[in-house]
Length: 88
Image: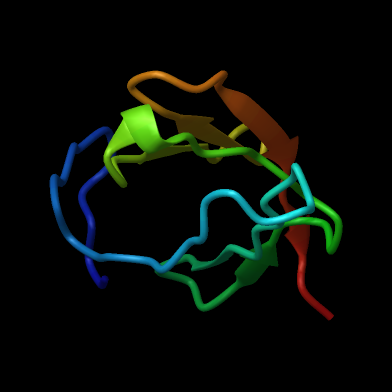
């Protein structure tokens, strides 16, 4: 996505693959975000959130640029968040 206005909400803009019922109870995520100035931020390598069948593949991602934090919200599963760091 490019040129996303500040404080905007975009729905159904991308999809992702996930598995349910595998042995590991955690779902590891890697998220990269590029700002208008060209800076790239990323989540830590072991960032995890778990999605359930009841979420029906729906996830809302939010970014707070001032605190450099990523927020993940699910309809049913527990929400989670993590710091974003400037990518090397």
